[in-house]
Image: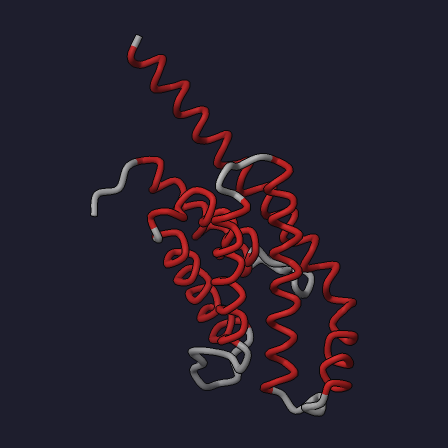
Length: 185
């Protein structure tokens, strides 16, 4: 598969976003939703965006799990990984619809939806797979209630990273377009 400069820039931005997870940050202030939205907006029709987002997230998970949070044994996936990766797929799918045309309003709305999807899916996973809450409706409600304080960081992370990724790309891509036009004159 031959890649043009635009695709390489898009992929590079997604990978760079995943690597920001290695920088100290507040709990749940992460680029997960932004990466999925960004990939869906600019690479959605090619299907490459979801694959790159998943691989970049998995690579950053491997680094975090085995270098930063190491328990002494190699960890490929954490207990809730299925639900986290499932939320990436759902956010990506929503992003292909919401961001079929990229506007500030759609990007902000997509960021909010990404936060809600991640909150709903990941905490459902905590309830289903964990032992912290009884597997009852009251246990599910207690799980979601306990997660509310972390939601503000999810919202902030998705918003900040979405603005950053989309803005960086627009600046780089538009700068490249201007440079290309100047070269052809």
